[in-house]
Image 1 (tube, helix red, strand yellow):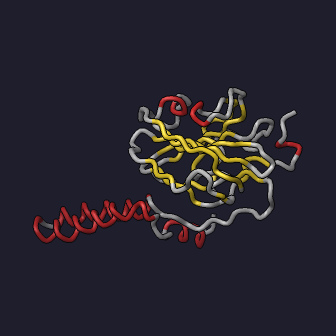
Image 2 (cartoon, rainbow, N blue to C red):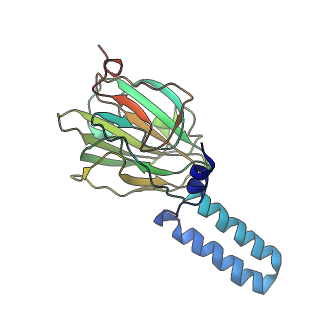
Image 3 (cartoon, rainbow, N blue to C red):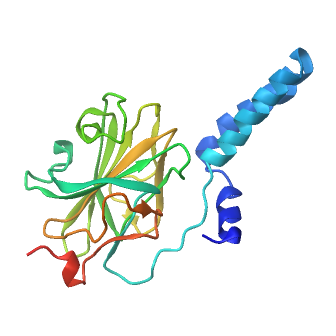
Length: 230
């Protein structure tokens, strides 16, 4: 990663979801510092700096070629395995490849659409807040599941999953929305996981442990033989 790219990533403007936290940090730094002393100022300033970093929302540039499934989030892949999508989406009981990406508090937390399609169902479910890096987080944790239909009629799902300290999942799309690859569709505050359930018969071309760049890294290719499961 070049120095210029790293600076653009760190200094990217914050996502709107971070504004209340940024305002709160600034208020604590200014008013608290004037009323109680420098330690309150530095506490508020440190919290504000952390929020600027956590909520950063850099521009991403998806590959222009159709048929590519892109990473729905930054982070690293913690599991790649066949799994049944969340039952609340109504996508059936046939296992399909699931690619799970874990986001630490240091990663960009803005979620992006993997490919062009139409949102057919959104289902939110309450749950636990265990470590999002664990496989059972997909089943047990609080989550927001989104089903999307491709132009050829096949379906896939992307699931926002709360983590150990995450307490707020935000989703900005609605059922019936037409979405494009790389579009921002939500954010999860303070550590999380994002699962991508590929269409039945489509195989991922990534490996466990690989680092993802949301909206840019290719996870599967509908047009490439390596990405099609026989």
